[in-house]
Length: 244
Length: 235
Image (cartoon, rainbow over all chains, first blue to last red; front, side, top):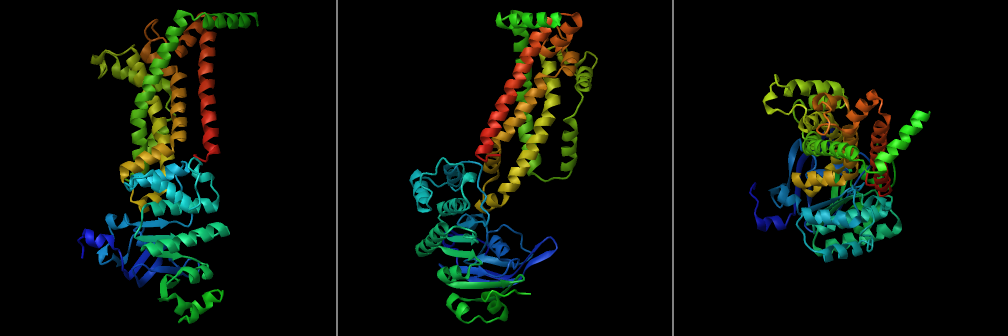
């Protein structure tokens, strides 16, 4: 179980989360959450603000310390080899103080990915063709998020984690990012995204995980969830009511 | 007023006729300050980076120490270095008192804390900014450090130029450990002090003009770099 082997490493799913608890300071953010994320699924993690969605994603990515419980990737605990096959796009993208091309080159160098052509193609794919020399932090909000996604795509991740990737974006960026998510899914990636956009969750997700107050209240098929949510909290959330 | 005008005229004459003594003093000043800056950077940049990214017991004490040392009085530094390298001092056997080497050491003691403290602040800020991204990308430590230093290059250049400014304009320490010996340890600032006391205002003023020109050029470069970096949001 603890040993890694190459055969297993290529396939990181199913991701099993068992009795996971995470605290930040004195605050318990995730309270004994358990779920299973299927291979090649698009899972939308939804729930009100402060429910623990982003921390859940960050914990899968190995960015937060676990108090209790465990996460396994195809029965293997998280390690650097597994994390190298994951990519995370943050809600507020952190871009290096360099131009667009250098931001891509940095990831390429860290991950030992060769190929100017690959970078060029990915930038074209996210609509940033010809932006090579533009300082990354001068890009618009949508462009920044697309560059952040481009860096993630360069990794060719088996698991793609997206924290509200289209929040506050223009329709063009939103459509483009959604198309890329679907394309990556078709290529075989397992995608987990957080969103407040119910229409987006319906359009993209095969599975839904519903969070409230640090707990998973529902994990189910997306069609089932939107047609017939099991908990009153989920019903209220879908109907746009405040959860107390 | 006439004396001042005469001094100005003569100082320009010295500058534009490439006066040998004047340029000897200028070159020694640049050499001493340049070498002390280079050595301070070799010590200060890695040390500042280390203090910024590593957590260890006593780290705050080190930071307080280096911050305090930024304001060290040059004459006190001069006195300490003098006591250390004078014939009866623990390093007297080196025989470096009244040599450019002693002046370089004194200047290093003055500017290394500036490089360490400011580098530490800059790198701490950028490492916090990149923390989650680098953790997510599993960036190895050495590549992360290179990235911090590269991405903070404009800010670090500001620090380096500030260190150079401190070194080139310093007089108190170098006059004590250098002795202001003609053709050996006479630099711009010590010459200005000496020639003013002798009433030879033209040479003092000529050196003052050069010193100001160096300061102005340094600051001009600094401001241009800052504007360029800000326009690109690189700082």
